[in-house]
Each structure stands twice: as structure tokens, then as C-alpha cells.
Length: 402
Image (cartoon, rainbow, N blue to C red; front, side):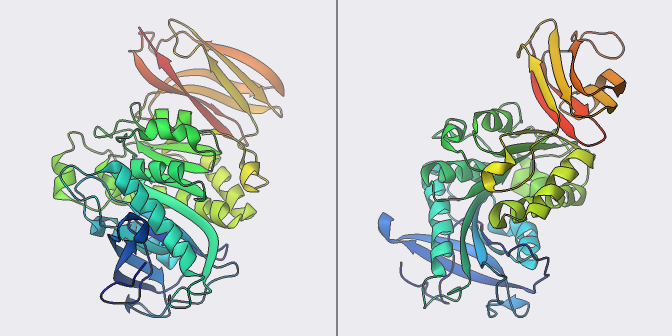
């Protein structure tokens, strides 16, 4: 890998994020315009926008001293026909929290190569991680061993391709990930590492039922799918005319509210997964259980990443799935307490309350007959069955087929 033509090299092609450890320091954020070259692919150029923790804010400032354990490398892929600049919001937030963020500028063609984009993403993450061993790099001695592939829409699908193709990547997270060619959904089956997927109920570009839901179902590691109520596809980035032009439905929440909620959950998850911060893991689980504005599904065990955090204290199963006309619901409670069992549509609205009262510890059963609270028949489609107790919230997606 040879240095760029301008300033000392650092990062990769997608959003490569170097995240600080479990400390909550707020660093000044510096930026750089960099290009990496992949020798394994005929010196393929990988240009990127870089955000990183520095000694002072501004362009090309010295890199800050890392926390114990060093920074972590994360690579982020942009959406179709999107510029790197519309992801500055997440780059700035991650960098201020101790992350170095590189937003990839490859795959801007009218007909981009998704497989190549995934390779760019993996190359970016590895390059940044390995820069810690290179005396010529500004990150020499500052990098830890962990890496994260991220992205939005097409870049989200590419982040899955990257993780599937490179088992050295620690984890994957994305916003409104899109199915790709080759299939990101099929690639999920080979990913047994931590994954955090964000979706929006008002996304008509990559509807969750066709994209993020089957991705989450196919993953095999500790994974969480968060579906933000009222969120749209294009509000995961800053305003872009091209994105807005291609979106045919609108959000029910503001762009700022959508991004703030994403960051509220993403920040402790990153600290938990990349730095095995058990307090952050507990914070993430607590936010899932106690925060409104989204539904979620979670599977796998947090212990798989070294966290002493159970995925849930409650059991919940819905069967058969798909169902018609009646779904059986089995749930288990560790303690006696108040319980609500509700059915939501994909916009987050409660369409039926199944249980609302106090229940004893142990196994319980209930059923949903496919009707709404008014007694009418619910339409065919995906619904979320949500169990809330005083200590946890658990959700499962179920398909009603008329």
C-alpha cells in the first residue's frame, strides 16, 4: 500500500471508524481527505473522508492520544448515489466520542459493483487496524485489534458482504441496509459475530420486511434489529436531493430526532462490542427495555462477546409463523410482576392488547386471533408481538397471511 498523493495515509474506503475505549472523553474532531491503495487488487484506489479524535479541531491535525487498548477500526459505506458528506453527522459524533471515521467515496457509479464495495469496506477496516503497526502512519501505536463494518442502504448491504468475506472483522452495524448483488441476505448466514441493524417503519426504499427483517433472521451471532417508529430511509443521512427524490413516503419524526435515537443506542453498543465494556452493554440492554420510539428483536447471547448481559430476562415465542387465522404466544417470566403483551403494526402503533395485568413467575400462554382492538380483521403482513415487564422488553416479528 503506497501513501496518498497529499498527506500521510490512514484509512480505507467506506466509513472507517476508529473508536475509543470505554472512556467518555469528548475529543476535538479533525478531518482529512485520504486515499488508500489496495495492492491485492492492482493498487485499487480507495478515497475517503476521514474524521478522527485529535489534539485540536480542524484539517489534518495531530492524532490524539488513545485510551487504554487503543482505537478500534470501523469502515462505513455510503448509500446508492450518495456523497460521503451526508454522513458527516455520524462521523463527527463518533470522532468526538473517541472514534476515527472514514467515509468511503468508491462505488459512486450508476451501476456500482456491490461485491467490490464490500471488499473496499473490509480493506479499509483492516488497513486502519494495521496502521497501528506501521511506524510511517499517524496511528502507529494507537490502534487496538477490533474492527467494525458499517454502512447505510447499499453501503449497509456492503457492510454485510464485508463481514461475511472477512472473518477478522469483529462486528457489523448498519442503517436501513439494502439487499445487494451478491445477496447480503444470503451472506448473513455466515456471520456469527455481533450485529446491530437499524430500520425505519416509514422506509419505502428498503422496506424492513424485504431487507432488514430477513437479514436479522439469517444472522447467527448476537444480533439486534431496532425499527425506529416513524423513521424514513433518507433521514439516516443528512439531506440529499437525490435520496429525497427517490423516496416516495415521508417520515413522522424529524431528521434530528431519528439520528439522536440512533446515536442513543449505537454509542453504548459500540463501546460494549468493540471494547467489551460491560457497563455499556448493560446500558444498551436497559435502553432497549425502557426507551420508547422503536420496536426491537434480539437473538443470540451477549456472553458471546464477553458481556455479562443476558439478551433478555424473559422468553417469548410466537407460532406458527406465518399464521392464519390464530397465533399461539408462549412467554416466560422470571418474577411476578406487571405484564403487557401487545401487537404492533410496522408503524409502531398498538393494534391489539393481549395481556395487561399482573402475572406470576413461570410459563404462560396467550393467543392472537388476527383481529384488531375494534374487532376487525387485521390485514396480511408483518406485525410485532411485544412483551413488556418491569425489567425487560422482548419482541418478535410474526407474519399474518390471509
